[in-house]
Length: 176
Image (cartoon, rainbow, N blue to C red; front, side, top):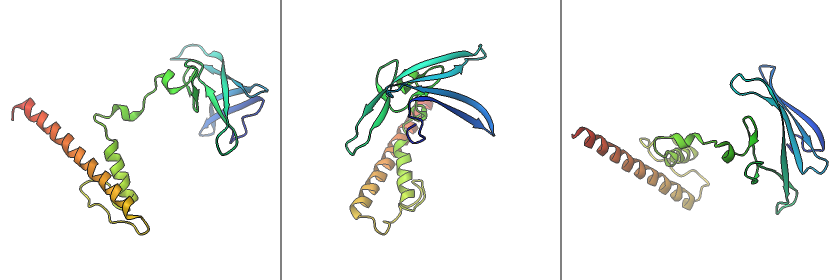
């Protein structure tokens, strides 16, 4: 909000458009001291009637080490300082809205493999353990290259263990 100059006393309107047509809007009413913003919008759930909502949100101010100021939302439910509030019927933090990350639904943790693929692509190679590990790029410290290579090897080793455990489970299930 600070970057778009919305963070000032008074009323600010924001709208979202899709293909030139307005699909949502909200009004922000900032207090004179910038210690509170009231979100003014309409909401409905699953075909119910539209409901006018006025949702007051406290703001907090901190001073970073290198100067300036940073504004935070105070989640009305948990009273914790938050950078982002997520909108459903009311705007609340991720925890209070019980929102999850897509990675939480992975059948098994994939972040080591995703990271290994990112490392290989960063080094100019191709993702995937079937491809050779790329050579050290010019200008990269050997220590950095060896650390990335070690990370790749650990991820590959973890993948082998997971696959082995999975195959053993299949063998036990089918008594092969």
